[in-house]
Amino acid sequence: MDQRPSSLINRLSESATIAMARKASELKSSGVDVISLSLGEPDFDTPQPMKDAGIQAIENNVTHYTPVPGILSVREAICRKFKRDNGLHFDADQIVVSNGAKQSITNVVLALVDPGEEVILPAPYWVSYADMVAFAGGKTVILPTRIEEDFKINPQALEAAINANTRLLIYSSPCNPSGSVYTQEEIDALAAVLIRNPHVFVISDEIYELINFTGKHASLGAIEGIQDRVITVNGVSKSFAMTGWRLGYIGAPHWIAKACTKIQGQVTSAPCSIAQVAAGAAMDADPSIADEMKAAFLQRRDLMIDGLSSIPGFKVNRPMGAFYLFPDVSALFGKSHSEGTIANSSDFSMYLLDKAHVATVAGSAFGTPECIRLSYAASEEQLLEAVRRIAEAVSVLQ
Image (cartoon, rainbow, N blue to C red; front, side, top):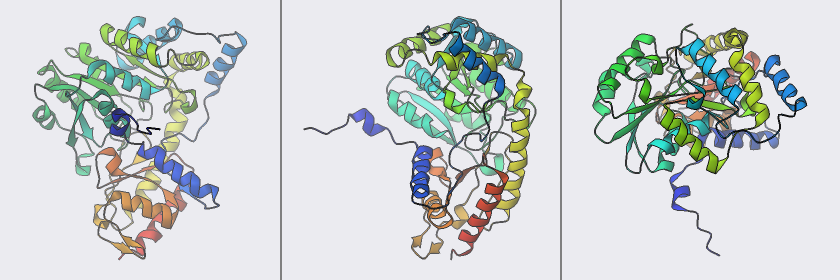
């Protein structure tokens, strides 16, 4: 038997966040008290209006196949949401509803990128972006950023990274893993660069839109002169605590939406009809429905910043969105403990899991190897205990 996976599979890596969550789960199952700060999942329940809509969909027998890009009424609700919240104007044929924003982004990458074409990824970037590009046979061009600049790219760096072979830029705001939020002025400056380079398309990943502590969200696709090259990605997982519903969507130029529908039709077809109806209710809900969750995350962010900033070797900034901290821990590289030396962020992340029983994710998975990612989507009690354990583990390093 030739037990040989395809070359495509060999190009892909396992999601680092899922891998760390699995290791933490294995430790927990063996009786170890692990505090998991590795997965990006709100520790809140789905709001009642969305649950009610899903239950009603079942009662109304909305349990059959739907059109591949999604139920028309749901796509129309997404159009209303885009117009109301983002200043984006789409018709229903420009919306494709998928099994989570992860599939949405993959569809777009496969629809746009040919083998050998370049895709710019500002680092840190979400772990799956690079593998999505690899899946399409594209080449990633990593654009590094610095914690002192809140991990945001500037227009000069973006312009320098673009060449004739550049096909796509993928970025997120609020960002996973850094929590960075681009202001309207910063988005305008990046848009000016992109307008000068009309061959470059952009995926604007806005999945954390409502977990934004600035009070304002800026959508690149709303800027005149670039709308026909921006694909806006969003979903219900983060802003509405609906991770298990697996529902994401895009707003895109007609031809890109049509291409994504063609891909999806051959891979999964439409997402779950019940989840679609619940997501439609989320689109029509007042965005303030997420305010209580956002306030809790803001309080936890400040708690974690205060705690981690007091630990020697941690450099911490103040992210303005999402629910992550992305401290620079490179000052700890080269430090030793009883079982070895911390050579990099992967070593440090594993050290924290083994020694402190706190699960984090190495920054190398996000293209920024000097950092680690911690999710503060956990109770304040757990977060305080996690900081205490991390501080204790760091204190014995030599």
